[in-house]
Length: 305
Image 1: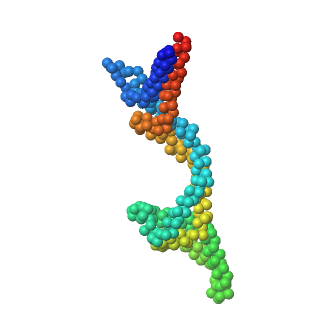
Image 2: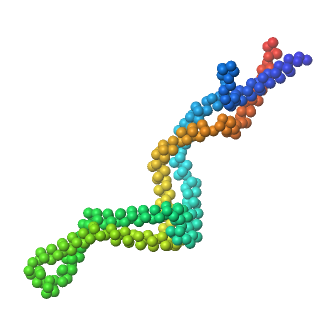
């Protein structure tokens, strides 16, 4: 029996196995460069430790530009299954609110601290008062208000024309009535412009206190019949916001940069474990494939010798 047909395949399989095993290990090891007499040994550190920065940048670009595209994000976030989850989340929160007997002011304190709540309430009151004040004193509203006041005064004068005092005034000079009407109109406009802010602010404050003293569940009950419409508005607004702003959001997030920084922050051993967790079976298969090829070449060598 020719032992070369046994020894050669065995040596070939061993060499193929060891060669591929060392090659795969050299992907990750050594972690740091090795120096002998001041000279760095070739292939140290391993390929992945040496090229980790380039690898991180490449993976970041692939994830950001090829995998997590704007179209994919829009498609995923607007899928019916995702919309159902949002609606289920809204329903869950509504159920919690329906059973909440707290006053709205106390409920706010569970979300924000007391100082933040007070600041928010004050901000809302001032913004509402400012909006109403400027709206009332806008040229359009003032013109309409003046027109209504003037019309009301004209109607009042017409109803009083049969009375002796008004007959005398009209006989003397009709412009007196017009002058009085203009004076009243101007005075009302002046009062609205100068004194209305304090009144509006007080009214807004009272209304805000009324709302804050309401129970959370009472507020929900008050809007119960409008909840389906509100949910639809929320979902439509969410979908529209995603479609209109996804480019801005992804640009601001800079997904490639996030992935790159995250990978660079990994220790080399963590990168090794990450890769092995995904491709350990495939890497082992490559090692055994080396042994198989070595075995096959070992069988061929004696035939050509």
